[in-house]
Amino acid sequence: MSISRLIPVLFAALALATVAFAQDELPAGAGKETFRKMCTTCHGTEGIVRSKMSKERWATIVDDMLSRGAKGTDEEIDQVVEYLAANFSKKLNVNKATASDFTALGLTADEAQAIIKYRVEQGSVKDFEALAKAPGVAAEKVAALKGRLEF
Image (cartoon, rainbow, N blue to C red):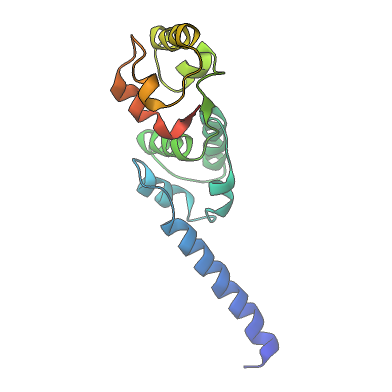
């Protein structure tokens, strides 16, 4: 095989290796395998892992992919959206967030208000340990949001 014919083959092999590597580098979590099954048959993950979108925007993207032929049950679709939101979303700044920002992450309106009240009374929240001390918010819920919050 001549070198001119070998170059495209080498580029294709490199591209496939890059996609395979990126798929192995996906964060662990609920929905990871469903994401792989539904999403990586048509395209690689490199653009996804660089994207930082809201849960609502990820849901819109997944809906668009479904309209283009992606297949999945309602449960699988929910898993994929949750996985993408948990791992590839902009982090919410606890000290700047509104109540609706917190409820968009799955907290109740009362929990969101409790965090805001705590933040106002205590000053800037420095870390997860401090946030877990907010009265009216379960420490387990705070821990579950660790990858989606910043200070």
